[in-house]
Image (cartoon, rainbow, N blue to C red; front, side, top):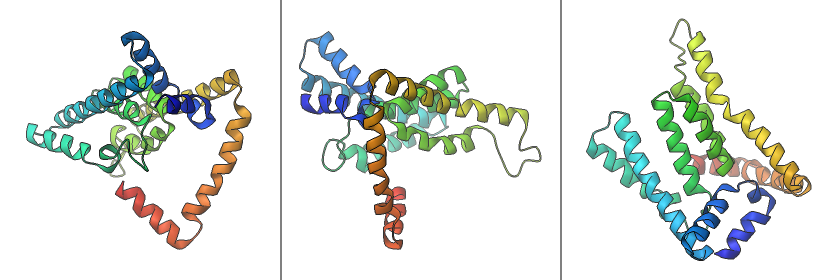
Amino acid sequence: MASQIRYHQEFAPFARRPLTSLLIEGSSGIFGITLGESFVLVSLLLLFFSGLLVYKISLKLNATRGQALFNQVAYFLTFSILFAFFPPVFSYDEPLQYCLIMLGILALIREKWLYYIPLFLLATIARESSLFLMPGLAIIFSGFSLKSKNMWSFSVKRKLLLLLVPLPLYVIYLGIFLWATGIWKETSEVAANRLSCYFQNFGTYASTVESIVSFFWY
């Protein structure tokens, strides 16, 4: 486990996600435990906390306690949670990402924008795939509606702007991080190599159908 932590600190695509590693190393120093033990402690506590957040969000969305509990159980039974630390998932940054995303959603429900922006920025730093949620969050929480006569009202524009603030902030963070750590070259090389993955997933009709179905399944 300690070698996996070092790998995530040194391999360029993972190195730009330092939050989980910092949390593991910090817990190791505070509690006087090994990095491997700290990894287990941090990961399981974050997964447990994310389950509590699912319950809390459900109640905030007017679910009954029974429905909230059902949502919590369904969350823990999803593939990416149930097999979090088994092949082919190998979760590392995901537990922290889940917590930060759900805390950000709670902030959106309460319209606490000053909390949402740093929370979602941290969720994106934890794992950049958080950005894929932005279109959905914009549709749900901006108040935008095609049925509205004034769909581009000042209120809608303001909320859309605030919802998208974490995106440029993340770009700024990434530029500063890559410059400070000197891993521009490694990052660009890995990015170029990963372009081949798009062909593998969408290069043929069969692979495209499989990729789309897999996306909605997970």
